[in-house]
Image 1 (cartoon, rainbow, N blue to C red):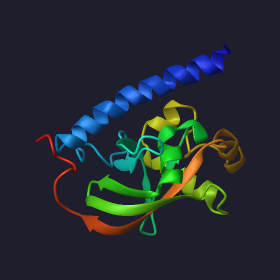
Image 2: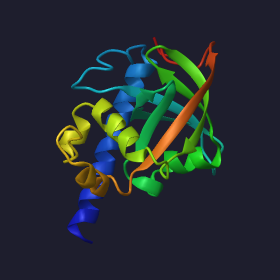
Image 3: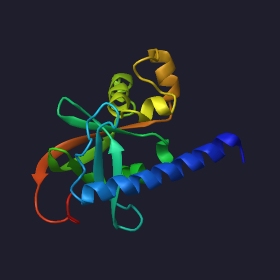
Image 4: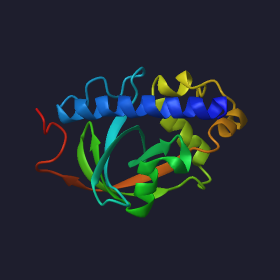
Length: 172
């Protein structure tokens, strides 16, 4: 196995552990704690349906709001299960600091504005982008595009507010 493959596998395991922690914070009602800060970044939870199992899945991701739509990125590209789930079943629920929203996801990786939108998502990710060598405030457009080549850009259009049980704070 190549070093890059080993590093990517290790990185994916680290993210999965961190995601479990972030989901726990949201379920305890602490999801907005530290959210939106320059260090911690903007983190939401996407509640989606497994394409194979039909089970409810939860994925914390960094995001940016641009013109009312929510943008996030699948940093590992098509191999991300949550990305594949959204492409198969695009109806989602978002847990955002301002509430829960029903939405519809689509891949806009081919958008003419991809670079600018992706840069906003990485800026909103706080320490994560620079930690992995993608400092969006310092890289040229060409270098940024090269580093982000395999990243998938997802737009989620909010449709309506969601209320009731089963959302953030359900363990509080």
